[in-house]
Image (cartoon, rainbow, N blue to C red):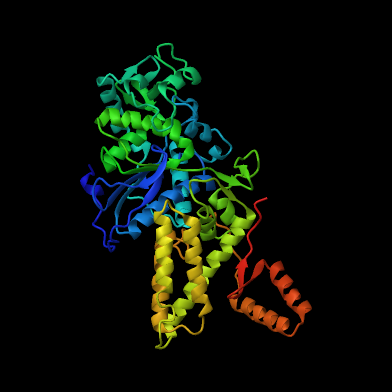
Length: 514
């Protein structure tokens, strides 16, 4: 049950009849409607990052899936209680098996070259959490209702461990406390990694002769040398990575939630272990619907520092990329398929975001100065928005939704200079709703200003526009040498010209990914 301080206010958005949201469910392996325990109220938990470094654009593709779910649910009038956690302890480096081994990612980060900038692991965690929130705003993501930290919910994790021991579903050894997977018959129902399969395939990664079986996973690690440790009934140590999400989801959203999200790498072991812990603790189904985002590729390859194709949001912004264009590129493909992030996709996204900005500026100008006249858009923009919304309700089909939104922006630009006040009001409503649904027209809140942000040279928009008009006149006079010279001049100044059906537009060039 939601605690009192986290109950959200009733939605002021209009209800949209019988519209519902359909998403692919990892558990049932099919697209199905999201069923709500409470009519009109979505309880949604999506796994956040481990704050040992800057979140990369692959992380943000997953976070954007969650953001689009929130925006789409709100568009049909649902009230959304959205929780996304911060992992700041317990996430070990060898996390591809249920009971991870290796170092805590936070501790290893402190010993890295970047870690030399911090006095202790707590300071490191605070810095990267702040950086995450800055990048979150840059990409125009909705802020969760609450963003709980693992280190702030230690009491809940210790109590949950004690309860699982009391239920005979966990046991203590000299090195920790382990969940007994054989005590939970449904283990493997999300990932397909059944107990029988695990017996023969999972290597024993924890040196503990008293551990009953390879698949059992840690709820508590006994370690007096760990940099982040707490005292528990089992001695000094720290919690296992999986436990935090179980206790925080139940604390803020209730024992059963409607929807749980994350990256495809979390299906096993993290989410499988969450289910076992949570359902053992409550005796109830933990979650009805599981959504997982596929991996991001960069120039056709898996992103990695070794391959030289690893990018954070601030990397790209520092090279001159438009944050909303990064967002557009990351949502341009459906979340159930791998997305290839390239120079071309970022360039196309930049051009499309500029179209929306131009349309927004045209509409604002018309609202200020346009006279009376007919609404030339009629039902066209309304129909395009409804088609975009229907696409999002159909398993977040962003490819179709973006195409419909872009068609609306082009429709507005074709009427530039002739838009009446009534038409401008229709266009403004369209752009506002598109932005609420997709977040690509303008930022919902002001961008953060950081000392690290590179200073950008002043851009004389009036001069650029004048040169564009001179180029158009030269082309009309068949003086193609002059037209090409103007293009080269602007290109050398970092301004790219793009000839579109609505006229020539200019954008500030971004650096190549390569």
